[in-house]
Amino acid sequence: MHDHTTSTTEDDHVYLSLAGATPGPEGEGRWAYGTGFADPLLGVDTALPAGLDGADLAAYCQMLGDDALILAQRLIEWCTRAPELEEEVALANLGLDLLGQARLLLTRAGQADGSGRTEDDLAYWREEHEFRNVRLVETPNGDFAYSIARLLLFSTARGALYEALGSHPDPVLAAVAVRGVKELAYHREYATAWTLRLGDGTPYSAERMQAGLDAVWPLLEELFTAHPVELRAGVDPAQLREPVLRELAAVIAEAGLTVPDVPPLATVLGRAGRDGVHTEALGPLLAELQVLARAHPGATW
Amino acid sequence: MVTAEVAEAVPAQTPEDRFDAVIAAEQRIEPRDWMPDAYRATLIRQIAQHAHSEIIGMQPEGNWLTRAPSLRRKAILLAKAQDEAGHGLYLYAAAETLGVDRAELTEKLISGRQKYSSIFNYPTLTFADVGVIGWLVDGAAICNQVPLCRCSYGPYARAMVRICKEESFHQRQGYELLMTLMRGTDAQRRMVQDAVDRWWWPSLMMFGPSDAESPNTARSMAWRIKRHTNDELRQRFVDMTVPQAEHLGVTLPDPELSWNEERGGWDFGEPDWSELTRVIHGQGPCNAQRVDRRRAAHEDGAWVREAAVAYAAKRAAEQAAPAERPTPEQEN
Image 1 (cartoon, each protein chain N blue to C red):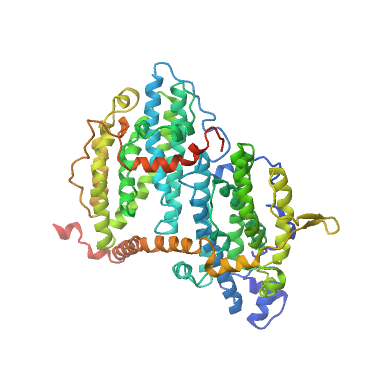
Image 2: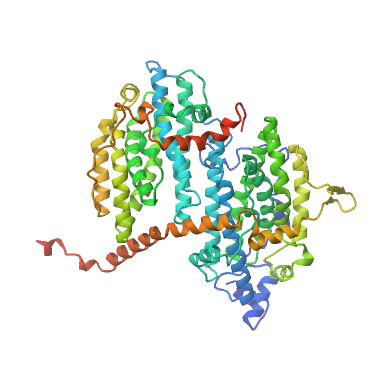
């Protein structure tokens, strides 16, 4: 029962001589996807199926990949600032999922358009106006309630989109979507649980949660507004509008809060995130994300 | 149960005798077993400091999370920060088995009454620091922590088994980053050497003062909390690290470093203990910043934690008093 006595030789088992040791597959499974040393698309058929327009598929993958990358960056900003250690773990987990999706989608974009650009070429060397994420993911984190409200909207909408994309003719996009459905289901569960806790916690937390929902709500409509590329290469997001709004309304009602009645954020000459027209928040975010990579052109990390 | 088994083997009358017998038999003390107050206090202090170190240790590397120069490095670093938060959680849970709670320990951390490893009071100035922390700081932590997997206090020992496995991944990934940088540009190689220069001595100081200056070592060793002296562990770390540095192609910043054929180990110079003393006493480059960040997170999150408690209390009250809800019949 308590015979934990061990020999002193066990002391040395992790003093693996690193010199010359090549990282092997041992234990890679416990790492977040994509932190290992292998090709991120290993085992997936990456040939472009006939009938798919490569440029459109690439643009579409950039749109979804940029959404995931920029929101991951925002979640990462919570690291060491979360309200509780459990939230440190959970928010990092969500960030890792989104980062994993972004890496696959951007890699696919570079393959599909024939440019051969890597995930890092796309993440670090594009200009602000070339990013095609929706504006919802780029606004600053605000307080915990704002971040939760944003996560609730994004995860509900993105989960629904990934479900629809599971049967996409591109095997890579379909594979990302199939795995993403499970990840986003957890993100939605997490955001829902906190929406309920904050909405039905203390009077102050209810006030913050309502304020968070009110503040992100104007950015929701953009997720349902189709860009021509989305219509040609993916799923018309307008068809997600009704089921997503229904789900959100149910969570908000259960939390004892009110569905915000606020108009959508206006566009600029009809253009928004998908067209590369962003809020002022994206520039500083990218400046930070890209600064080191750009200081060392051509370097490998 | 430990005490019962041992009691059969070694007839003992007092709880203290039984405790001593368990220790002598290399078995584990468990939370409900009797233990001397000083043993409990020593463990609480040590485990709490260790937990605080994991949490504060997220900050120096977190400094590079938003700027990591590739998405793969960003994912690796984020996974590492997440592991550290997890380690903090296991360790606070281990401390809680000794009768303290996490909130109390957090309060002591942010009010400066409990310490964390002074290594985290140094700044991370380039991305190479991320690799060097993995290689040297995690390497030194592993040397310190592997013997703790056999610590006499069961919950701490068990937490350390998992933590050590993860730390060894972090060390390997740090080393792999440095190998990549050393194969890269001149600027990247300079970055690595500069980081090694800055982190080498603080890493050696992670093992604590020399044995002559470490009054608590003997008692902790007698209690089987500690297995090796500070100087033994430091020597082990140096012996392990020198060939790794050679393979990497960096110079360790110690002119006195030389192979001692006679004792089969590396001789090395004396760290600047006066600098460590200043850092321990709050004058390190980042002491105030690290604690301020932790305090801000704790205070900014207070309303969130209060909401979670209030929400849980409401749900518990509903569970306890279901009859207060009208039945459909009553509503009709």
